[in-house]
Length: 303
Image (cartoon, rainbow, N blue to C red; front, side):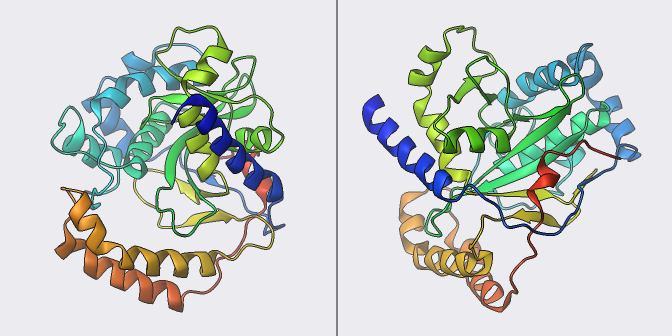
């Protein structure tokens, strides 16, 4: 699509955010940050992340790590999660190994844990679309920059971030609110030297629209630590049922298995079909997940 056509689509996504800008009141819960996991020492000993991060603010150091990691991690949307979800195992499996790609969920986990090991507060954030028939959600890392006293989103899959008209790197919640108000937001690649943000907006409109599409609802790892906590905090918009969305999504995904098998060379139907059948049963039996107050998305981290 050309710029004008893509901007029309972007406006549709912004309209969805506008009409669903309020989150459910939810329970008051804080994300937990574990900054002292013993595995962090192994991570910093095995890889030169301290040297790569260098000196500077939390954001400056995290961006250097982002720029180092992102080109070295190949993307595979059908990655099956067979490697333990921690930075040591995932880096051993995928770093500089293009034949062994991983997905955004695991890339974000790597960046999160590296930042935590460096003493930078970080969390993994998943954001999902309005349509249950759209399977392409996304996962990124947010870090807390202490000088600015705010969260900033860094995306190890696209090697970039979202900025406002001043070039300030935004959190996902900030980007969502600005998009809902049709205020300026654009994607910016971390390696870009372009100073004209309007040019970047036109150049990167498709990527910016992609973020808008997925920003309907947000999830955050309940615990930021080495390895999986197994729990996500849910931040759904008002009058939205995660359960109903999940059932519709799982049923449609199962229906689409034959089409995926034909379209994607790396789609293993023998592996994916049982998983998708299981997902349908699981979602039909699930209870509505507890909503968490959106205040947790902006709070200063406490370890």
